[in-house]
Length: 260
Image (cartoon, rainbow, N blue to C red; front, side, top):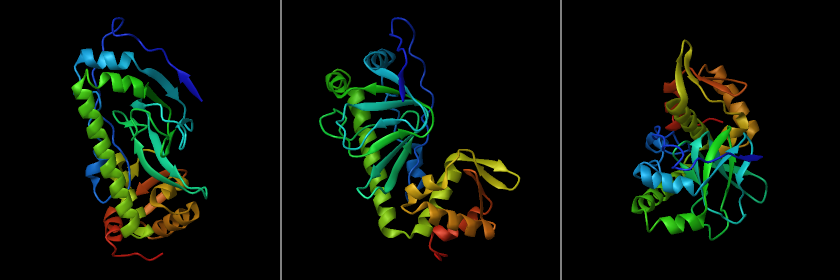
């Protein structure tokens, strides 16, 4: 389900200042990719931003709504203003692998940003989200007029290329147990808040969410989290994760303990 929200023209209201970009979340060997690519609008002048946004369509996607679908014709990109978009690939068997979660300041819908081919993967709203849809024809017309926009698109696509390369390397070289430990440490870095018992992950992730990110089944993730709970490393309850022993997770992700 989606709602078209009204978009104010630049003549009606000033362009708001840019808040800091949110964290991208994906499976990789390093936390350096968590920061996400530069905000697509950051290098633009207020006048250029107003011109770009005035030609976009602001939309609201409620949690679980499809933003774009694998195999459907590409019709541009979606600049995330608020919320969290999960991008994933669906295999013919029905299995899914999450490529990344993207946040404020990121754009999704590529790599065909000019909308000339079909989507290679799907995107859904992982939380209630607000995006600005920029059609490929609009971007193609604006790129020659706004060089900073072209640079932002190139930087964003280059960052995504590094992300998906890192994901492929992790899936090909690490055991599932190591990947789960790496993911839990990423969640700690991105969403961890101090708790008397350890570090609480402030955003909820179901066992299925974790399974889609590490390339495993939900049942395997459930069993693994129970094993980690028995070892007093992690607690999991109704989508909430509590990291009690980060050092133990670091040892697991380095291959010190790959049992299971």
